[in-house]
Amino acid sequence: MAWLRKFFPYENGLPSHDTVGRVFSLLNPQKFQECFLTWVKYISSITDGEIIAIDGKKSCASKNSFAGTPPLYLVNAWAVKNGISFGQIKVNDKSNEITAIPEILDLMDIKGAIITIDAIGAQKNITEKITEKKADFVIGLKGNQPNLHAETVSFFESKKLEMIGKESFHVENVDSGHGRVETRSCYHFPIDPKWIPSVSDWKGVSSIIAIESERYTKADQSTATETRFYISSLEPNPVKAQEIVRAHWSVENQLHYSLDVSFDDDRSRIRKDHAPQNYNLVKKWALSILKKDKTKKGLSLKSKRMAALVDTAYLQLLWSQGN
Image 1 (spheres, rainbow, N blue to C red):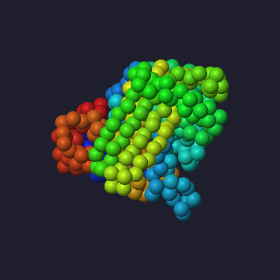
Image 2: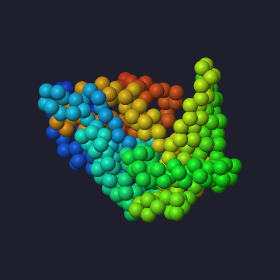
Image 3: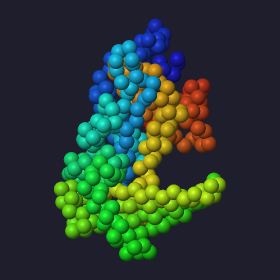
Image 4: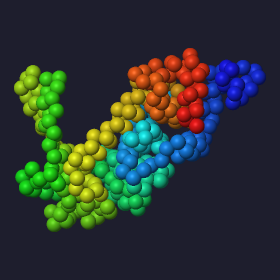
């Protein structure tokens, strides 16, 4: 209480749970996010080569059946190196990510950055917007773009043997553990318009990344193989391409997973009006501060939250680091 009174007198004591809920439900989420982004720009910046992973997440328990509102679904932009959220856009369901991605790109100055998106982001208007904003991209490619995907698969299969062993186009890694051996081959090669004529309609697409995974399981002596394709604006560099593809999943591991495990996001029953969206932004703000703090090495994010609750000196330190 004494620490909070540094910022506001609270002459009648702390506000109740219901009062806090009403405030969050009434706050304009767009204006609140503008304040958040101003803070983000103050404490960090997007540098050349920064990987920004864009992906959606649903807060399962936020569905309000009585009011007829679906669960909160947000498209997030996660700066991998900075370990911070650079914005969020609310959508009705996963299919609406296609319209939300250009909106979230407009929130950020992405010049020099590398934008990564799964296959739902393989849209001509999205690659065009990223290119116009002077950024690069690595975007998943699947059957939702049938012509480009089919031509890419055919081109890869015809040229694959020529690229094996050439460091400028191909790199291979082998990992083992937990009774499995996984061999990953990354191919990164320029597009030949003769083989992939559909690419002429796509602005900025200049190369293809193919990730081949072969997983051998010792227990049942089975082998499973998978090949994933990506379109990119980058020059061929298979080592860098493999790092970028792996880095994209940090939006799941460092943001979505952390929100669920450390902030119980999937079980949050905050449902009224704008409260789910606004409170989710507060969680991301707190998560970013906790991740940037290096003074409590070895502590989990949950433990850091508890430490801030019982130790006002640590709480003050976190506040200072985030301002």
